[in-house]
Image 1 (cartoon, rainbow, N blue to C red):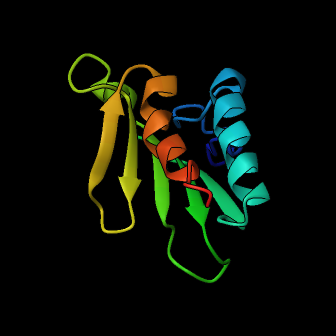
Image 2: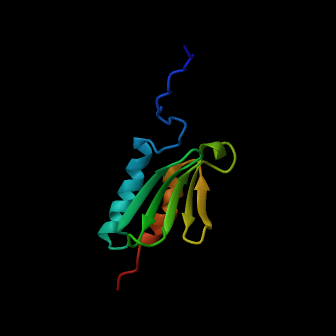
Length: 113
């Protein structure tokens, strides 16, 4: 008789970073306003080991024009939330998600003639 250890079942990967419902509410509210203005058309959410990403697309087949990132390891340094542009430049970073999202809200305000 051989000693066989049981085959381990795949477990849920709980060590991934994700957005909480209270964090998604202001992000989706901003997203909805940009969709209504005709600027944004699609989004994607990624939950990875070190960060969570909310990507915004102008068209589905393109690269994201903005990424809203959550990196909890940077909480005590630069801030865990960041808005990153299409070229990889960090537009705003901080610990208050509302303040970080204001950099995108300014782009929604236009001069009407």
